[in-house]
Length: 156
Image 1 (cartoon, rainbow, N blue to C red):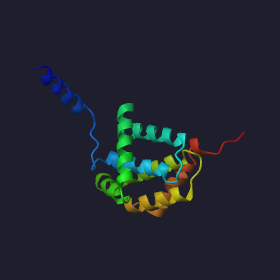
Image 2 (tube, rainbow, N blue to C red):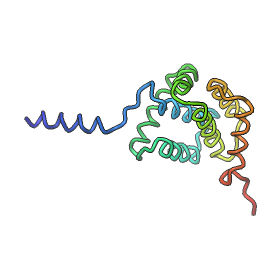
Image 3 (cartoon, rainbow, N blue to C red):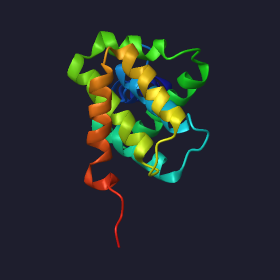
Image 4 (cartoon, rainbow, N blue to C red):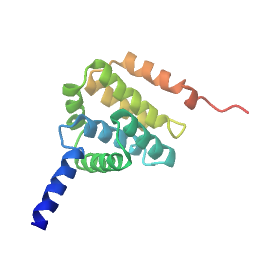
């Protein structure tokens, strides 16, 4: 009987926790985000902090859920052979404003360490193209993030 009660409790707990499967747009977004901060070969602390913050805010997750989402995203990113696996999920799940939001979020992540490397710029260009976001919109989103108060150059 005690085993049956434990099983019920485990099932209740499992039902209350989010499940991150391959078709979940949260996983696709997080996988692109994880890739964005690592694409230049250096993952700085400000990028990690920004990643956690954006995932929590965007998906209304607690700390544990955010950690599990990021871990799943890293796993999926390592297994992926291209970006299409993620962008195709997002293209089906999001409208154009939602897809623009993903591109803007990627710019926020690459600016988190204070500079954008060529490989990061190229990565976002490829993602934007796959999401159906025009070059003009991609550049406008970059400028908006670049000129945001938390990305402005510091003056003494």
